[in-house]
Length: 261
Image (cartoon, rainbow, N blue to C red; front, side, top):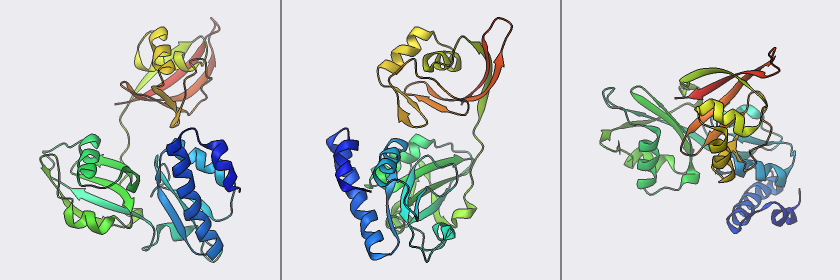
């Protein structure tokens, strides 16, 4: 764990500033042997942080539930165990926004409304929209402000309350199952199959920096994709290479791809 590694890891000045802030937060907690936490991090930001801090005892990535896409880094001293992440004084808070079921605000509506309320994206974790309610995760510092001021998403009126983290409702994603055979598990081939587009167009999306694997940007069309990996393509959506089922008689790879709808 070396602060000098920030310059080796950061790719932009924004990366450098973020990593320096993360270092100051976590290192202060470690020195004083008290709990400390960061803002919510994207998968790419979390990957950089993992390189910076390495495998440190007591350091957790936590976004409120097990499969969270956006996570905080939380340091717990040795006198606290992992259960402290979900206790009442956790730095991660879940808010539930209830609304009339006839309305159908989207993830984008909620995110736009939250940003419109004047808070930073880094204070908001995953946003889980369901029928009649939306559970979303925020830093404990910003929760009281939102409970007082976050009353609508677009034209949809909201009733907001804080709920225990373990009560968060994690909706099952709706997916379309695609069964196909591929010549290889190249990224552009998987994208072409999952979104039903030509491979050359898929390669263009990747080369243009519009694709990410498990949240990490990838600009290499020939990057190998493994079973279970999630791929997002800006402008197209998200898919998951659900299973790789061996080779066919024509020596092609049988796959199942889930496209999120």
